[in-house]
Amino acid sequence: MARRPARKSARPPRRARPARSASGNGATAGSDRDKIIGALLALLAEKRFEAIGFADIAGRAGLSLAQLRGEFSSSLAILAAHMKATDRAVLAEDFSDMAEEPARERLFDVLMRRLELLAPHREALRSLLRSARRDLPLALALNALAVRSQQWMLGAAGINASGPRGIIRAQGLALMFASVLRTFVDDEDSGLARTMAALDRALGRGQHMAGFIDDLCAIPSRICRPRHRRRRREEDYGEEAEA
Image (cartoon, rainbow, N blue to C red; front, side, top):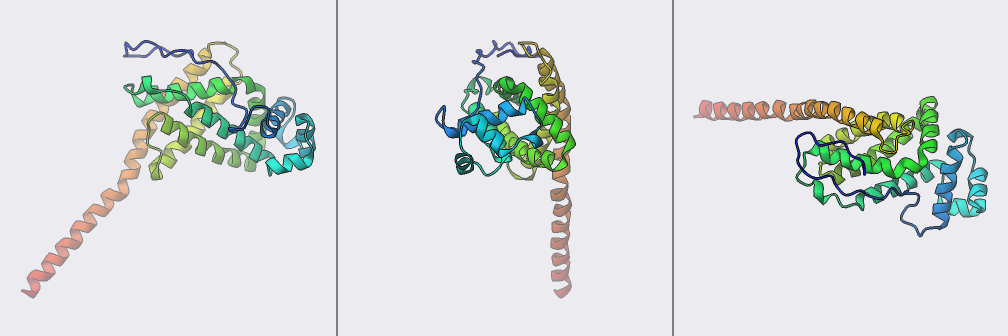
């Protein structure tokens, strides 16, 4: 995979990985689920998300409405299945050669792999981004799916994504990744040079924000500790008064 040069590392570049598409959700290739996901992505490349009906998806997939309903409850559920399939494809990769790299480098590598997997669906992504800008409920629903996915991406990069800090990190990463996608969908370079530059800049901003967030998350414990000490002092004074 094309990667930006490491700033301070003499490590040789990681081996290139084949650019494949994650279109299913762990299902057998050519399964009904795969056909449905592929159908929705193909339709998104042609029309707005809100203009795609169940009959359109079923017809493009070559299935009946009953078969479609048996697999998915909504169009958003189909998108969720595609995102989960992409998560699984990224998580199946071997990132062990990045173990000694800084967290920012590891995350860069993980997210670039995700973008490579999404490359065959640029037109669908472009359409979905446009729809999300016009439809706040859709944007919020997609954000919830993206946060869940980015928690897994943080995990793949060896970065803690649990607890309040993890959720905040994942939310920030979801917003950052969405901004990079806007560059990605128009990046015609096979090496994704513009996308890599945008991702690098975004991670740089995120690194500074992460430090700020860590400071914010530490505030409650800093407030609580003095109170605990004050309570102990008050108890000591009470014992002395009784004596």
